Image 1 (tube, rainbow, N blue to C red):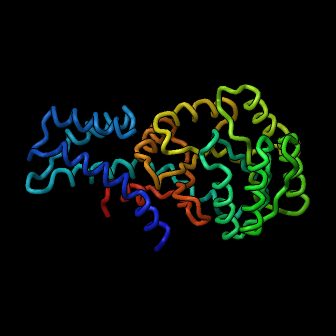
Image 2: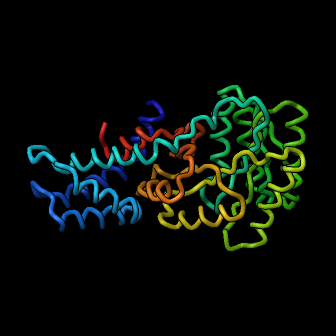
Image 3: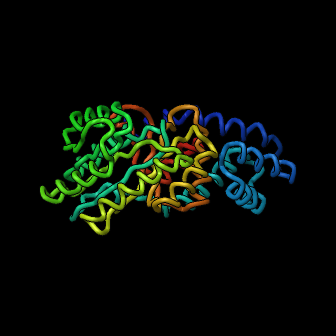
Length: 305
C-alpha cells in the first residue's frame, strides 16, 4: 500500500462520515434555499469554517446541476474543485528538497500534537533527499522528549545535539547550529517544548531560541513550522494566531488525520491564514507522513477520484 492509499484508508472514516452526512441533506432533485442553508450549516459543523462554508454555498447556488445525475456527487465535485483551488497555492513540496546552504527549522506546537514524532518523520524524508540532518533536542522541559528524539535520531541515523532535562533550550539550539555550520550540515531541525499560548514564560523561552540562533546565522530560523492536531477542531485557529504573534509561522503540519478528525479544519485554516501546508500526519510509524498535495487531499476528503 502506497502512502497516499494509506492516507485515504486512514482518512476514510472521516470522509465517509462527511459524504454520507451531506448525502442525507441532499434528497431532492433540485437545490432550494433551505437545502443550501442546510449544506452551509453542515459544512460549518464539519469545521470547514464560516467563510469557506459561505463561499461553497454560493458556488453551489450558482452552479447548474444536471438533475439526471446524483446531486450529492455533483456537490462533492464542487467541493473537490474548491479545495484544490484554495490549497494548490499552499503546497510546499520544496520544503523537503536538498538545500545548498544551511536551513534552520524551528518546530513549535502545543502539548500533545505529536511534535517530536513529526520531527522524526520529517527528518527521514529530508535524509532520503540527500539532506544532511542535525536534530536539536531543545525540549528540555521533559526528559521523555529528549529520549524520544534521541530514539528517532538513532532509528533514522541522523545526528542530534542534546543535553539533560532542565538545560537551557536556547543553548542546545545554539550548539546544534554551531556544530551544523562547522560540519556542513544543511538541515537543522529544532524541537521546542510543547507550550500553551497562555504561558508567558514558555513563550518567552521560545522567542529566545530564535534570537540565539540568529547570532550564528542572521537569517535563522529559515522556517518556523507549527504542528497542529486535527482533532482539536476550531481551537487550532487560536493556536495559529497566538504562535504567529511570537515568531511568524512559515508553514503548517496537520497531524492525527487518521483518527476521529473531521478534516474540514484544514480548509478553515487555509482560508484564514493562507500559510503553506508542509505535510499531513497519519499515524505513529516513521513513514506515516504525507507530503501535502491538494488534489490528493481533495480526493480523500470528498471520496472522489
